[in-house]
Image (cartoon, helix red, strand yellow):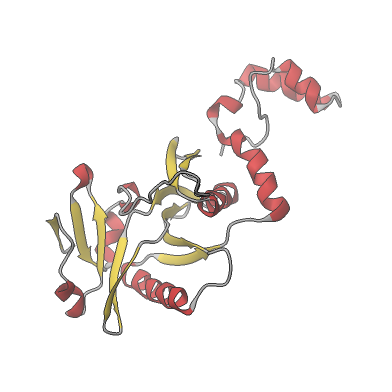
Length: 227
């Protein structure tokens, strides 16, 4: 694969000369950039640090945090309520093994302007496909946003990625996922002996409250077995 290590932003001439550039942070925070081609599939870019981190302001309705990802036992960063809702959807649909938060920046030309775009997530699917996700905005996207998504789809085709605009769940679906979300944490899953005891409790037709009493209150969620 063609690449070299840089510390500052790649020059605009790289894009003008017809190259679509992908940038990411390697270990130690060193910037790397590469031509958008199939060689990037072997780089494990979902492990890279975020190319951009949003600011946090007092009295602003932004929502920063870490989402526990059961398949890896690690955490995925998010910076908005829509991003964490999108992560819940990916998690409970069960199609993504590994997810990285904003690990790449795409640089391409739109007319006479050099554009940079930072997709929200890069995920490795269960079947091995790599997918760049943009979280859909709250409301109809502008023409500018749609043009950027279209160019992102084209760039993904050069690499072998797929691109998807991900709509977060809403309404009852979102509320249910929010309730079930704690069940993904390892501390919510009882050991085998207690799990067998709970199955006996529920097999006898007792209530959820009686099952929780059998667990001694130590396991706040007893739904969703490990994948």
